[in-house]
Image (tube, rainbow, N blue to C red; front, side, top):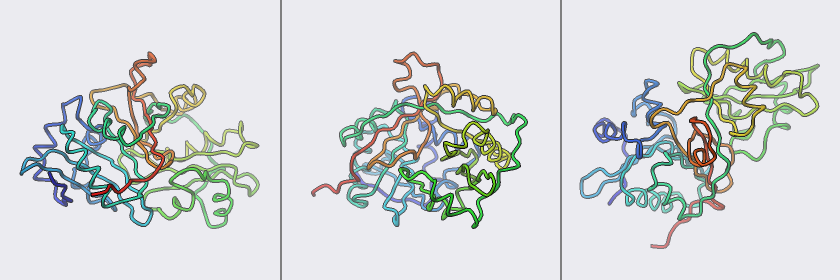
Length: 313
């Protein structure tokens, strides 16, 4: 079996189509992106995106799209479709050999036990699940006079207060204007809060929102989110929240978000390596069913304690 980096996905369309209606092996990210009008070639064309195909004596056994950022020694599996455990093992062995010590995240359908089992063998631990909420484009009246895009005058304050235990630190977000917009809340020249939100996708997402403790309760979080939603139109918006964080869920519902009802094949799971936190994609029903949760998408994180290890030949 071999792994090949391909740049033209057209010849694999029949293979891809064979997974669309397969609840166990479909890929939720792939399905949602296709529904949003993206082709696989569009996905591959994005910066730092790579498509890998596994085959066994000419038979295609798996297709994977990964984000790989060499300067950060970071990779993320965004899409993975296969019905062969050997394909997953071949991909992971390939990554371990070619990207040793990279921090790595894997997003996948939790029903695909082949991917899950291979990652578990490498030491994955699962954290609390989250639900996906989607914006209905029905924003209530909300004042945003004190909210503005980040400017040089306030960069130092933004960086000082930004979350540090995340992959997308403030410095990285600033250096990725093709991916993120940053809005800040101001009171008498003081930055009281911020929101980092993507803008380059058909469905965007707030990656980080924060308000200083002493300024909470004044509506800044609501105003930051409102500004992000207005600036994102007409694109869609989604977010993730811990399934048991009732106050946050109530806030988002009041801002026009609804829990995403579980359709066919919308489940996914995020496996992380090295302690990278909050590089989120949406996920589902793993544990949700056991807890008696309502039929909404849930999100899980499994964390590896170290980077990809190069195996001995």
